[in-house]
Amino acid sequence: MGYFDLTGRRALILGAGGIGGAIAKGVAEAGAEVVIADANSGNLSKAKAEAESVGGTIHAIHTEIKNRDDVAELYKQVDETLPEIDLSVNSIGLNEYSTALETTEAQWNKVFTGFLDNVFWSNQQAGKRFVAQKRGKIVNIASISGIVVNSGFSYAAAKAGVIQLTRALALEWISSGVFVNSISPGTVYTALTKDFVDVPEVKKDIESGIPIGRIGQPDDIVGTAIYLLSRASDYVVGQNIIVDGGYTVR
Ligand SMILES: NC(=O)c1ccc[n+]([C@@H]2O[C@H](COP(=O)([O-])OP(=O)(O)OC[C@H]3O[C@@H](n4cnc5c(N)ncnc54)[C@H](O)[C@@H]3O)[C@@H](O)[C@H]2O)c1
Image 1 (tube, rainbow, N blue to C red):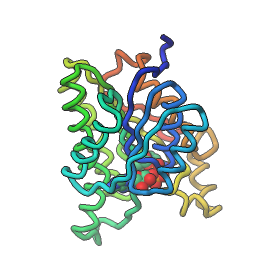
Image 2 (tube, protein in one colour):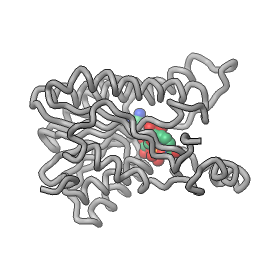
Image 3 (cartoon, rainbow, N blue to C red):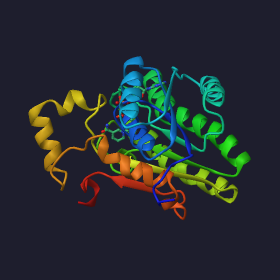
Image 4 (cartoon, protein in one colour):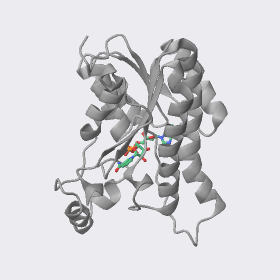
């Protein structure tokens, strides 16, 4: 079996948007059977069609996660749809921006629930299964905003939380054969960034800060995800891999 081969593996990918959808296709192409879950039916069917176009087997679950119970319910449905998953990727996200002085409790909670709490509850559900079966790999999609501040303050804080959560869970579970790592993308062209990247001056400004000279595309994140889900990363524990065209190197 090749280093990056995912034949026989079973993956849940939470979030079928730009990055999650691209990862679903890549993981399916690498041989895994995939279940993808998202609140957006359009994104779900697009991701399903894309993964099927490369010969993958992919199931779609429509779910709108608001809390721990919703995540538990989702994993129950996953158990019925694709039992004994051993790979879990968390790639959900939403648009919410406010300044620190004006942020309301609702805005703060929206960002933290969406970007940190839901990731933890998903990690907990995956962790319960993976620790019991003594095998599994989890990849959380964090952000360079968890390291440098290039975004809203609450997003930055929540993403720093995802990176550190990843490290803490990795240490808790590695003795059971369960790997937890994260990926921190730089700016990637998706529904989350489209509104400002589509403004030519803003695009130019962002690109001028990226040594490789262009904004990322969802496909740019896929190879790192496959690496972290495959046996190629069997000595990589609790790491956060930055994939940003060199932005944070400067
Ligand atoms: N695009 C970027 O520049 C960038 C950079 C760094 C990190 N990220 C991270 O990548 C992840 C994926 O973002 P993306 O850029 O692919 O955005 P996206 O909007 O294309 O995808 C996000 C998906 O999450 C789904 N979603 C959101 N909340 C949900 C919920 N509560 N229940 C079910 N589904 C829900 C949405 O329906 C959407 O399909 C996010 O965590 C984001 O913070 C993105």
